[in-house]
Image (cartoon, rainbow, N blue to C red; front, side):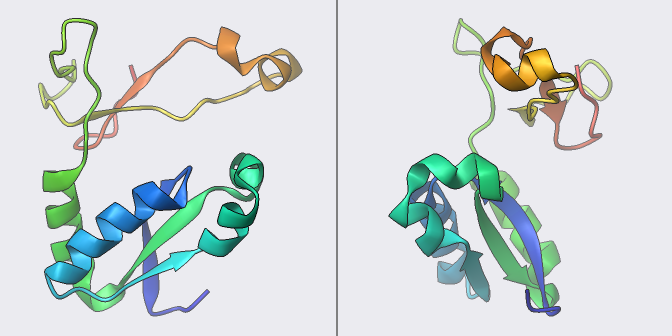
Length: 125
């Protein structure tokens, strides 16, 4: 990986990454996608190689984070309301990645309880 770029986010599929990449480039930022072609050739290995990485040039990182925060889709509850962080009351909450702490959850990840993560204060709840 090029030292001049930082991973902004990771996506399961390249189509999701392309949408964010296009928006950032329209704002004049330098971006790259990593592992895009590998996952396009076999989407089932996305989890194994860590997904498609959206990289942003280090000079544009602060601006990219601000723009990406505005266009990102945040988690909603069953009533289509945004979740609220219990720590900072922000509505910028995403579904947290699975932890898979033991072999049971590695084999049966659908049994693991869904957790949420605030993008502002990094609280997992």
